[in-house]
Figure 1 (cartoon, helix red, strand yellow):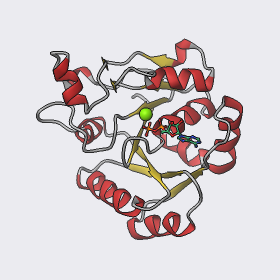
Figure 2 (cartoon, protein in one colour; figure 1 turned 45 degrees about the horizontal axis):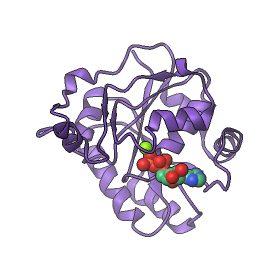
Figure 3 (cartoon, rainbow, N blue to C red; figure 1 turned 45 degrees about the vertical axis):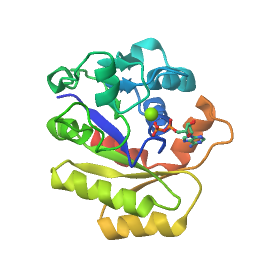
Figure 4 (cartoon, protein in one colour; figure 1 turned 135 degrees about the vertical axis):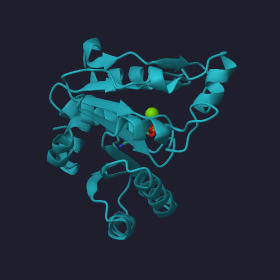
Length: 213
Ligand SMILES: Nc1ncnc2c1ncn2[C@@H]1O[C@H](COP(=O)(O)OP(=O)(O)O)[C@@H](O)[C@H]1O
Ligand SMILES: [Mg+2]
């Protein structure tokens, strides 16, 4: 069985790539995979994670779909005359822990019939939900959690990203029953050393490692 963990978010720009980079950096031997990449400029998420972590190329799996247009995957694919096939998105067999970054949020369409969340349901692997701390996050987070639960997808926890907001960080776990894995603060300098230190200091890595067991 592939020891994979899915990093999803309440939305695009929630901080998934930075969190996934941090986890790939801090979990021994972890590999990173972005199965569906929509948008290749200024950089793909894989290239961003490589540059940010400084990890060697063999810690990265190639994208299954690498699409130029920065749009919803179903549209980016259509613009290139491609249809995303969920059967081509099976989790790769690997002995290493695998950090998988989703595209956008959960209800992003991959094709005319399937959403990102449908793919995660097929995989059945635990999901970490990256959520902003600021205004709007309660609604986005609780909706995302409800959608995951409705499909029986295991939720490993919610991981906040951004400036502290004690009440939002309290009420979402309180109302949902989903534990917080911590909050990754906004880093003034986004580099491997600072990211490594911030994940070690602020994120419950032991809980995340247990999800990969
Ligand atoms: N902890 C952080 N500190 C500093 N900048 C961050 C942090 N998290 C995210 N960012 C920045 O915010 C933007 C969106 O983050 P990203 O991880 O790419 O989001 P997503 O993958 O969810 O679209 C990027 O420019 C990224 O560099
Ligand atoms: Mg990303």
